[in-house]
Image (cartoon, rainbow, N blue to C red; front, side, top):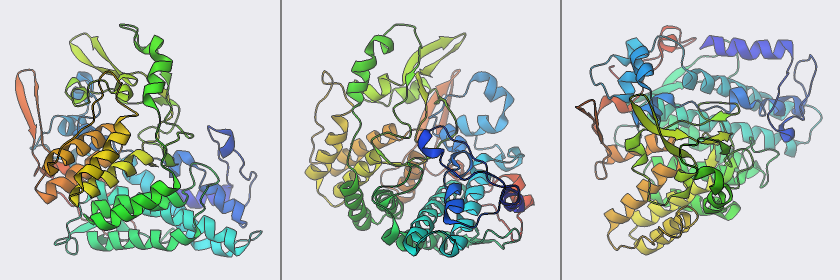
Length: 468
């Protein structure tokens, strides 16, 4: 843990030199100096490569949202344990090296702590300007802690949240800052309080897509409350977020524009991802597993079968591919992907679930179908219509899982639903004649801390939240 803070200290000592993939992220202070002005500290928020990366590799593999090749399964036992749902594997022993999810998240937290500690006393800025940067750092810190607690700890359950441990909580950028592995309840209280304090100062229109605006604050609040099964508050903040931004991207239009490339048989020419910095659905942008110009994950055949027929978003992103004895759906988009931030489609589907939970089935399906009309090709589209709550919720869950694949949310949702016990999530697949199952109560749903964290916890202690 201390190494993260040493890294930040070195950055301060050597000066801040950041680069960006977009022109609007390049206006940053240069030269060797210690930060003193608000602009110096605000520039840390633009470090997209470190502070805005959400690597969920283990969760993505567990859900089989990422195709893992036969060679990778043979060479990486941890990949095999997650992807093949090996209940007997000791993932703690296999996680011998540092893990990006853990260390990148805490590196970001260190940066955000630095800003929170200093923004209100910086020079060359008004108090109102200071508060904006301070609030943005608060939201981003809360987002990182939400990711960590929903990866390395059990999901939130009100009856046990005050006794189960979550992850180390650090609120200072000091290199020797103490850490305490707080309870799940304490962590959620901290997250909610950070956002509560930030909301009055967030801008309606942010400086860049990396800076959370008011809509992002509301949307994140909705995400957190949904994870806590507080559907009333989740719906309230989903509505507030959609009042700030309710745009949905026209994936049918994207498919039609690129149809001449997409529909060529046995051709895997990439088209440009629309899910980058300027995606109309963005509240804020954060990278996923990769933090540079790249392609996304390919997916297994079984995963592809869970998409709706005529889903233009699916057709535009993956195509069946066979190489040797392996067949999977190969990715066909290239560019940037907002897999770590928050988008309007997530908030629409949070709203739909909350309405369905409240028995407002017709209203929930209207929201769901609003999303689907921008995704499902007209030849395949039919409104989903039912008066049955379970049928409606399952349709919402299916769409949400498909929309947010490669993000943390399907993993977090599955854990939440499994803990609830009504709409349990489990998977079965057959490979080489053997059937594999991921049960709803498997210990695999909680990821172990990397050994580097437990063996070198800095000024604190870390207890594993899972046996293996």
